Image (tube, rainbow, N blue to C red; front, side, top):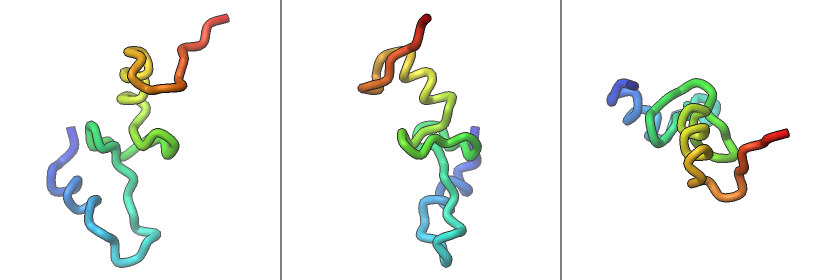
Length: 61
């Protein structure tokens, strides 16, 4: 769980653009946010397993 205050702060426009913090919009996680899908690896894995992300297929070989 992330702190609500930090989520609100991350949504605001930063004073300088390099200070922007990438957060997962689903759970608020800061680390390992995938830019292409705009979510953290935990949420990505869960949604990909359920088949809710178009174009993502579980690999098997």
